Image (cartoon, rainbow, N blue to C red; front, side):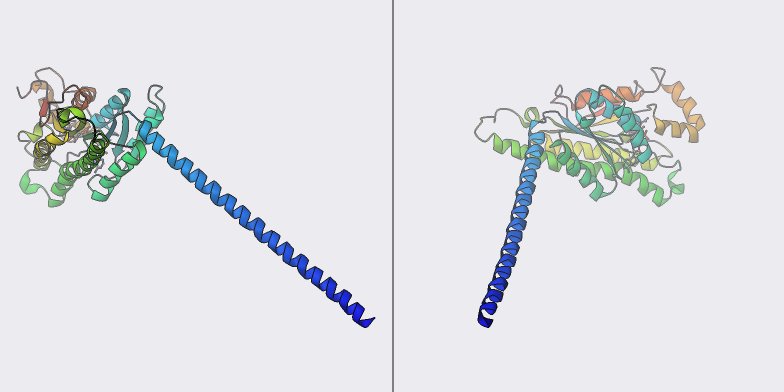
Length: 332
Ligand SMILES: NC(=O)c1ccc[n+]([C@@H]2O[C@H](COP(=O)([O-])OP(=O)(O)OC[C@H]3O[C@@H](n4cnc5c(N)ncnc54)[C@H](O)[C@@H]3O)[C@@H](O)[C@H]2O)c1
């Protein structure tokens, strides 16, 4: 009897143990299956996301432009002009409030699809931030075709012996250094795209077509008539604009055979917030300017924007290395 009870106890213990093992195994298998399902779903959605990203980039046939100083004046007018023309535009500026107002204007416009605009707030005098502007534009729109390097400041009014080194550096960094940095990373990206296009076309016989007719990459820098002649009491501004002229001419020659056109615009006085600051700080200057214009008025930002859009268009492939004076015949 005693040994029978033991056997029963043993059998019950055994079946309890077996049940526990079975339960644990079922739990482990269920857990593994759930984990496997999650991994598969994750990798599927990753693949899906990747595929969508690639498709978005491949299917985008719009020209892509960077516009710096896009939140105000000439840059703002040019960004809006590019958007009207169907470009995708990365709008870049340091002024957070002005960028917000640009965004509100664009979002309330029925003619501009929001997906064609990418907003980037940054300081273009800082190399890492400029690198990021180009990187972010390319990852957003897939490539880069045109750039309007336009951000700038006027600096303080002072003759050279009174101008502080800090004030001189601020103008040179914002105007000239930023244009150098922008061109450096924009051109680097355009050359990458050119190489990709050439290797994709390896079997096509395109040697007879000059690079300038094939790629359509264009850069326009904002210089000024102050980049071609003197501007007493604004020597840093004047020096920065002369530097932009020099940079643009060198780039035009260095990359003419790579299909990248580089031009600069040299406006005289255009009605923008920058000129309003000039007028505020220097009231006699306004009277002098109005009287001295052969056409009887200062320029409009929209007129400069149209000139930039034309320089970036496919209508003038032979036009590179040009410093386009837009001054209502003042210097004629
Ligand atoms: N308005 C004119 O009469 C005139 C004439 C000749 C040349 N320009 C040049 O045209 C360009 C635009 O001038 P505007 O009159 O439209 O001036 P603006 O002051 O209206 O616009 C300049 C924009 O550049 C931005 N900016 C300044 N520093 C920056 C930085 N470090 N990083 C990023 N953004 C920065 C400002 O926030 C501003 O939105 C300037 O380079 C200017 O020198 C203007």
